[in-house]
Image (cartoon, rainbow, N blue to C red; front, side, top):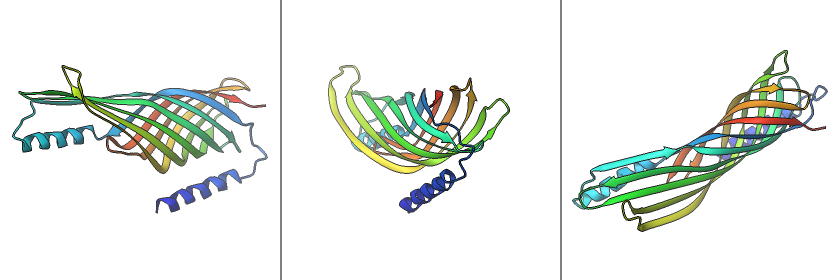
Length: 223
């Protein structure tokens, strides 16, 4: 089912690319930085720990978890075929998303350090409304391939002694949704603000769900 959806996305992108290119603009490349967040399983993992300790007649006095947002690096290339249609290929790297937590009872205190990083490659069609100053308000629809590396470390909260550690990789395919605003500074350079949403990009034990990323970018039109 998922492969059929991806194939449909490829065909849809192909229809846009095969549109008349008489008014096509020059290729552009861009570089962006921003912030991203995951949906994670940290609360579910703590619930499992709670159940485990209760089954051993222990009680958890405190159970807290906090996710820290990550930096994002985005590099891309694309072309506007008409004033309102274009396409883009790119890479988005989510550097590191951390979820730190602690559990505590009368006889122990444990710290959890969860870390995830993701590499996303994507291809997307762009649909836009172009204004008189050559800026564009656009929507993005495409597909992606995401690979996530997860790491977990459990240690004594006060002692720092490591109790357990593990690392694993997971990959997923799906559709991306996005929108943004692009402003042309001059004939060569442009600036844009962009939001991308990757549903179900994560499929691991520590992180499972969606990735959302907000980036600010600088574009350059090739000769």
